[in-house]
Image 1: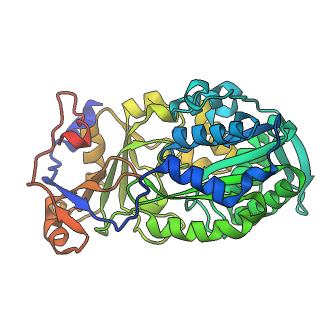
Image 2: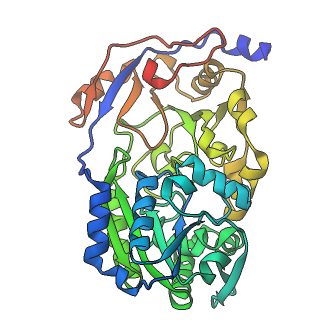
Image 3: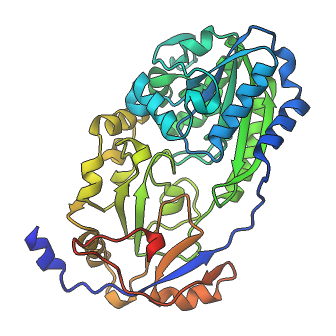
Length: 424
C-alpha cells in the first residue's frame, strides 16, 4: 500500500488528552446474595418439584457476573431437588452451530465445571405456534422437552429498534431460544416490525412452554450490576418495560459532541449485539449521540469468535481486524438479522496509523488542525477516553468530565499500530 502511505504521509494528527467521564451510578455489592434473596422473596421455587429437569437459558452477551449468576441459579434449583442444565439461548450466534454456541458460552466463563451442571447445546427446535402474520414461533427442543425453563439475561436498549421490549427476557424467548430458525423467523419482516413480533412470540412461549421465572439484570454505566430482578414467568411482560427504562437511563455515552473522527479500538459481540453499539457511535435508535463524519474500527475481540457484525458501520478498518473475520459466522448473523450492511467491509488499511489518517483526511473538516477526534476502547467501557487537544477546554467546562492527563503524541510502533489504550 505504498501509494496510500504517500497520500497520507502529510496528515498531521493532533495530540490527544485523556479524560474521565463521570456517570451517576448504583452498584450492587453482593450479586450472589442479592440473587438468592430475590429468588426467595419472589417465591419462584414453589413450582419446582424433585426430579424436574430444568433448562437454564443463557445468552451470548458478556453480561456482568454471568458465570456467578448461572452458578447460583443452578445451586438454587438443585437445592429444590431439580436437575438443571444450561441451554445456549443465542439465536444464530456462534456460527449458528451447536459447537459454536458452546464455545461462545465458554468464552464468557460459562462451562460445565464453572456452573456445576451439564451444557446441552443443539440447534434442533420445535414449532410451538404461528403468529397472525404467518411467522413461525420456535423453541429449542431440549428446553421444550424439559419440565421447566429459567431465563437469565441482561435488560438493555437494542441497537436497531425501539419498543416496549428490546433486549431482555422477552427477546431471549422469541429469538435466543428460537435458535437459528426462530431468529430467522422473527427477523424475517425486518426491524420495523421487531418490537411487535418479539412481544407476540413471547406470549406464545409463555402459553405453550413451562417457563418458571426469569433473572433480569440491569447494568450501570460502568458495565457492572445495578440490580437483579427475579421475575415469575407470569409477570415478565408486565415487569420488563420498567427495567428497560432503567437500563436506558443508565447507558454510558460520549459526553463531548459532536465528533469528526471516532476511533473504536475493539468491536465484539460481548460489547454489543451489533459489535459496536450505534447508540454510542451515533446513528442508533436512541438520539443521544451524533453520527461522526468518520468511524474507525481497529480490531476484533477473541470473544467474538470471528463474528465481525457491525464492522460495516465503520468507514476504515485495519488488516489485522480483517484477517480475524470469520465470514461465515458474520454473514450468518447478518442474514438472520436481515441487516446485511453491518457485514460490509470498509476500507482496509495496513496499520492503525493509515486507518486513522485516512479518516482524518476524508472527514471533510476544512482546517484539519480543528478536527475533533475521540478514541475509545469499545462502546461499552466509556469511563476513560481520549479526545483531541482542541477539545480540552470544552472538557474542562463539562460538569461530568475531568481532564486526567497532559496532551500526548500518538504512540505508533514501527508497524504503525497503537498499544492498548490503557498504555497511552
